[in-house]
Image 1 (cartoon, rainbow, N blue to C red):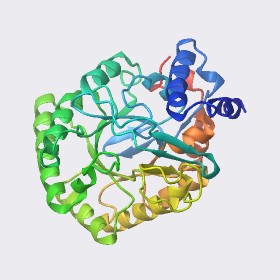
Image 2: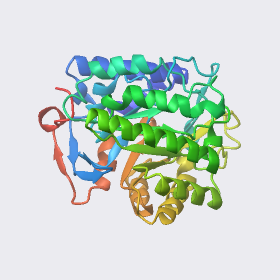
Image 3: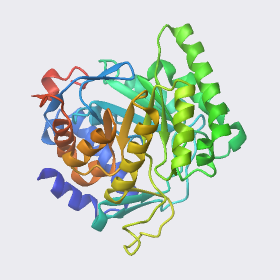
Length: 358
């Protein structure tokens, strides 16, 4: 009820301003010890994925907290993990505004943000200030390339970011699937993908030896892939021994929103209209991988039933983004309880969540 009232007010603001205001408000509530006004529970249902033990199966997808400035406030809402970024080696402003559009009739968002972020050094500063990772919280860092880096040198940016964030991350995600950076999705093609994965896996091996700690690598893919492309990606993921795949990013499809206000805006579509496409891609990838590599299901989760469908299609974990915008913290609890293997144990975040700030 509280969030539905807040959302009504927030949706009177321009979308990007509402986004920034909401994150600042969450951090303010957390600083005042008032996070419990929005959420005061955690579903405990530990699951081991990529060699990490997640307290439950639901996480926050990358893109909401690009600079890692609100990690503790978001962790207090009951997420089993938080993924920050996408971060690039150097700061960049992203695409011109306006670049974020709500489609409330469809419970959807279109964005063409373009990896706007303050750069990897600013992200690392914010991570160091956060309690969540210090207390064992699982923090993913999503990395990408700068817009002005030629696509043939993209691997340099991913390696540079990986070097920087390795020690601070629980796992690292390679974002090669955003539709909002020119030619980025070309990295999903066979030769380019092979080159990228060879480089980052070699760097991961060296960093693991140097630091005495293995940090898993995941690949985030697009939903707009045909069967042949899915097979190519699955073969590359197995061949290069990637630790996980996140399926999927936003879609360039406009099926279901063609006639809505802002439905023709350029960018990536997320939310309810993406659910079927993202889940189908997830299922095809799971089949191609033959359960050899764990999957994280993202795209269009608006209720517990949607998350269960992702698990049934082959996901071990799920992540929220647009559904969280529309339904708020209650969705975190609903989804975590819905996909809990044994019903889960509900506990007060502030008392028993070792991963959450106190």
